[in-house]
Image 1 (cartoon, rainbow, N blue to C red):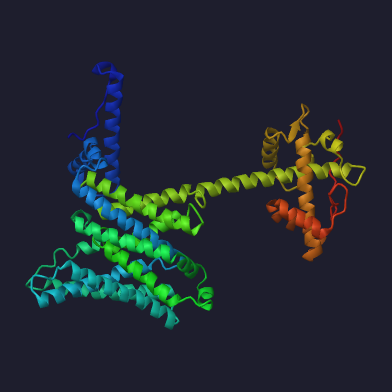
Image 2 (image 1 turned 180 degrees about the horizontal axis):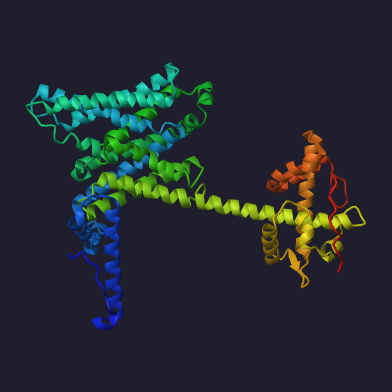
Length: 511
């Protein structure tokens, strides 16, 4: 395959427009993938990059998407089970604020694997790589590391992060030292043990998938049966302890589930990256919901999708290991959730803040218009006719609040578009009937807050206006009725007088 960019000339090639478009799309997609691979810093050189880009041919994707290879089906099913179990368990670790326990368990499992290998070689040379012995060693060692963190955190004055760092360093250092001993064993080679560090999903067989499936099913059933107890442990451990729940047992059980996920995942993503299977799906799901049940199943879904996507990409590009790609796919879903999550995503938060600023600006503008008219009214309150007939200038509004001229023009422009203000040819404005009703409501809520602060919060009348400005915009209908009841408003119009003096700007004119 050539690496140079092809130049198409539709008029000279004689191709039909459809064939020309398809050729352009194919060329563009391949060159974009080449640039992405180069940007990842794989260090392959031009020939290697072209060879890698060639592996992304449509035929390979079609083979992967249709799951035509038996090994791809096995690996995908096994990693999906791992993603589901990691997502379900990771939610409670995240809520318990012990997300890095998974990292500690992953590093702590290393000396258990090395010890199991050495003991196996000592008892029967050549049989040190027994999968059952290695898994048992990893489970015992990982559980010991997690328990060490809990013991240090409970019986010492060290903070949790220090306990995590000490335990992780201790066990990982012991594992690295034991691995050097393993390399010196004459009867067997240590080759293959390092796959537990980085994972090797391509080596999964059908028996491994059965183990993953049973582990995922067992963990999911356990979470469903103890969902209420685990949720209570995560949100209020002191209340759970005082009401008689066995919090220590539940904590130990939760740690045991983390160790189980770690042991299951060491063949796919490896002990180093298994913490991502526990943390990333749960963290991503938090941007979409605050409900614990939805959070749990959403985390399981994100874990399954990231696992399936990682296996597909790895199957289409054999030079990319499945474990790291699974983690990268999970990270991509995290970025998407971080930006577009419906509950706490940055985009939605920005939109909500923007809508809130617009609503606050409109309320302040309408209140300023009302108070301008009220200051010139002969009665205690501005009447409906006065509100819709009095013309207001831009200079009058500038004196009411600390707006810049640009900000005020934007507010007025938006208010005119929303039909709450009407612009006149002479450059002045007046409230529309709908705007007058909204202005009266905005003033009413503001003054209810002012009187509540003065009456019940011992706020000085000079400060009540500023304090009410900060909280009046969150008033709901029930709260307004409650304030009216508390303050026993008996006015016929239901609009209390301002408790402080309103400055009177230049007199607005009448139509």
